[in-house]
Length: 254
Image 1 (cartoon, helix red, strand yellow):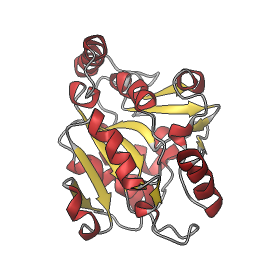
Image 2 (cartoon, one colour):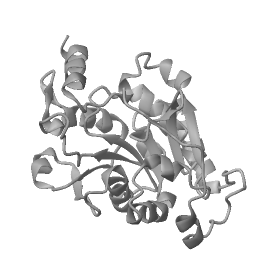
Image 3 (cartoon, helix red, strand yellow):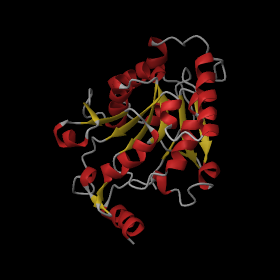
Image 4 (spheres, rainbow, N blue to C red):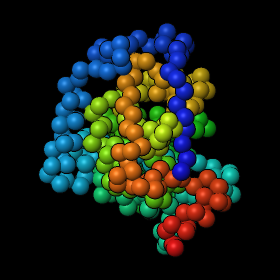
């Protein structure tokens, strides 16, 4: 399992000076928004009705970040075969249960043409997760995206549903695994777009810095909630090294 610790919120001068706070944001980072409340209601209605495509019910796009260079692994992890399926196909299989709109962000479209899924080229290449997240949010047909990386072969539908069901609570809804935020298992609203652009332009490429912007509300979901449906927290595991790959093969192939 990989994770990133979010620093204590701090003042981001260059961003805060250029972007004025939006209406409806309180001093505690929350807002009374009819739109957000509506999303929460639809999420609970979908849960009660047994609807599987909760992403559709909550106005959500499923975003897959597929632009990694796989330098540490030494091979293209997007098409690694695990248990007879590529990493990408494993992510798609989960997403097709949850979302009507799926968007892949990649450095080029050609390798993905046969998948029958919308692929968009990274608008700000070379800017890591933030550049891809900006691109995905920009192209999404929904106001919110749920984002994962292509190298997460053990995604849990139930763990994702936990995040989707709370999507209306903030601009960013993100798992917090004992102090380590999981930006690639999280929901982002289009309210993040101007802040993402400012961070990318400043080459400040950590998602944790986005979480620290006072004008954006952030809702953290504690680890204990996910352990109820995914005791090993495998939904958050991603492949970066040969050791990670061996671990994933053991889980999937036995």
